[in-house]
Figure 1 (spheres, rainbow, N blue to C red):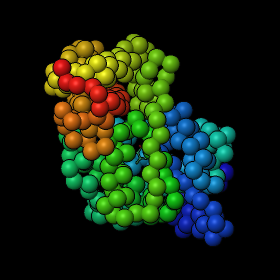
Figure 2 (cartoon, helix red, strand yellow; figure 1 turned 60 degrees about the vertical axis):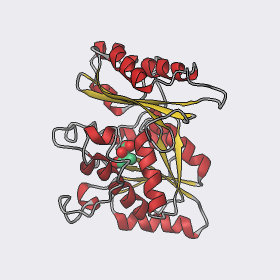
Figure 3 (cartoon, rainbow, N blue to C red; figure 1 turned 120 degrees about the vertical axis):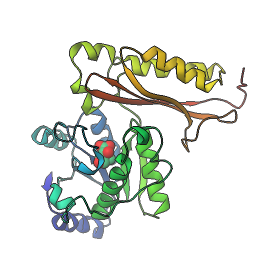
Length: 288
Ligand code: PAF
């Protein structure tokens, strides 16, 4: 596997593959790769003949006081995992490669509406930072297909909207969340948990599962279900929100919604955990 830092070399390599008629997949990451990322790489091989992986801890998507400086950077271990997974190219730009004019005045893209709700309320500017770097990576790599984890469900919807609104010729594939045996969604931030907190962390997914079961059972008192979930999470976790939304639009769910997503974000010590669960109910389900 080749590792490249500069955009010129990246473009040169990818261009050769494209001219040879190959289909190119991009897996954008911030590194510190775990089984969830490796699933994205595996899926990339199913969708394309070449898998490009990017590792870039993007300063634009971290707010003041967030963990940009302390975010785990484990390039050597990441590289070994990508070799084993038969990734074809690792793009590992520096901040100066991505933002040569500095990052303060950089042109940014915003996805209005979707970026302002849920996590966007708690992390102002975060999704504009994500959309900007994803658009830059798409322009640099020019992939045919790009893969994103469903754990970051709102991010995935924002990327889909970005691609649709800006007519980008990239197919977006969402890949199901990879979980630990006890249900905790894999995340680089899980390592911020102490051993005791790690024991408590599966409560997040368990609670989402209970909300999903209630929707399946026909309950449609959404605000009450959300409040019950918040109560179950507290005080071990400190929830930012639990929200029941329409899966495809992230609009607040209503009586006609059939495809739901229940999303939650909660603090546990220094870790901010996010997770979600999708629920599809048959047309036969009736509100109680
Ligand atoms: O999901 C992530 O790791 C990041 O938000 C992404 C998509 C690589 C953009 O920096």
